[in-house]
Length: 162
Image (tube, rainbow, N blue to C red):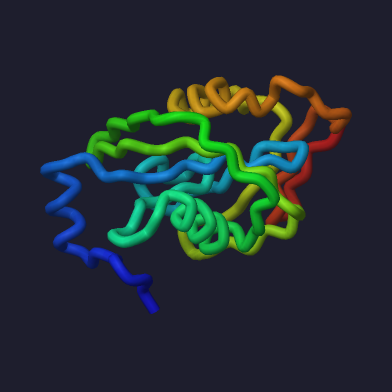
């Protein structure tokens, strides 16, 4: 069932052609930054933060909680608003409200928007420039944890260990 305020295609495609879309992006943290391997544009086949559009009638905080639950199945412990950014993609323009979300656990349940996920302790070398900007502005890696310097794709058998 689609949430109240959901806009179906093709109307949503038309709206994206003529105006920016208000969204939230979530820099999730529990010792690592959570990156989701995207199945859809923008940033298809890239690791990116969970995020999504704000629906009509939904507060920003409600959007953060909904998007976190829908895309990851995670529960927030603390939500901190970082600031406003804009993402200008070839097919859409978003004005996003960036949040740092401290999460209660590491048990991720993906929806069909993603094919995999990983937790990282530093910005990946191949990170999208917008992801790098979000990492920098959120200061998520400013207080370094004692975690080893490797990342692990959680949903596959591919593991990179020191």
